[in-house]
Length: 188
Image 1 (cartoon, helix red, strand yellow):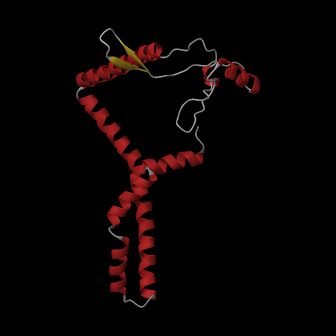
Image 2 (image 1 turned 120 degrees about the vertical axis):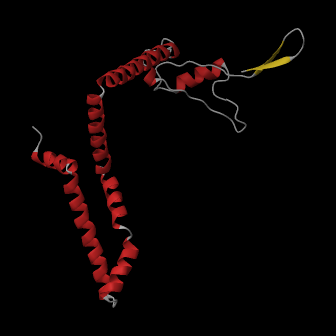
Image 3 (image 1 turned 90 degrees about the vertical axis):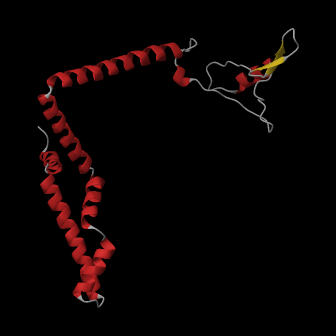
């Protein structure tokens, strides 16, 4: 059983007339306060009401904005749409069955393809805990990689860093290769 406060919250959210009354009362209160401020500043009542309407804007538009800001508009719309969908499913059960089957097959096929592609594209390269892998690099002012350019530098780096369990190095270079025709192709 849900606590009373949560039940009250959902009862308020699901009762559109109650929400509308609460928003109506709140907006009327603020509108009247604005009118009172204008009257206190020296305007007559009719002009104060007119100025308050200009400042506050359309009350219906404000009610919609309040509903959207609270999130009840979305909840009410979703409940209304669900009710409509259930009524239409009752009217035409064959179409409902076909739609549910198509959606189910779509989700199933999508899941299967994702699983296959994810398994094919992910490779672990024999790493036991890939979440702990760190890539370290250093570049000079020209953007060239300067970390571990030679085997002695790599060994020196390995001896200086104490928090690393294991260390591996690779080098990425752009080279130009030509075939018998002499035309060069760039590979990276």
